[in-house]
Length: 213
View 1 (cartoon, rainbow, N blue to C red):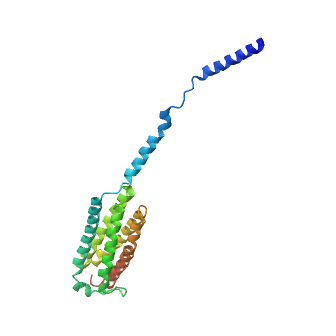
View 2 (tube, helix red, strand yellow; view 1 turned 180 degrees about the vertical axis):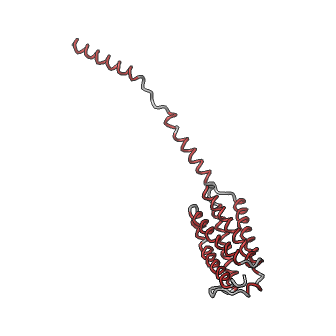
């Protein structure tokens, strides 16, 4: 009995030394158990604010701006293209469409251009969105300058350069827009195809009328 008691006492003493060496066990605090929750709440709150839909007034204003800019470019082109006496005297490609085709085609294309730009603007702010909007503005500026050069200034060579720059600019915009809004990029495909065709027609005017330009 005494031997057992001493051994039991020694065993208890050793356990006590080991406990003292390890130090007191600190229970997991409630704050440590609940800390991740506020962090998650903050993160979800930030994401929600980034996805907050724009106000109705800002959307209407943006639609008016994109529509107005596009309408301005089309009006500038329409005003310059009314001077058709000189244009009728030019030799043209056999692929040149009848004059009646241009008005409905460009009406449709300008609608696509405006809606595409508006859709890109509607996306959350990002470097890709900013780049896409810059390219959208660049292609529209090139578009607006083509008709005054060709029809107004009678400079088909200069307008051919502008048309040649417009095609890759539209393509770059479409590729950039595709990363943030695919429908916006798809809306520009008819415009890209028509612009490439118009560039060909412009180049043919320069080639066939080189003796007088």
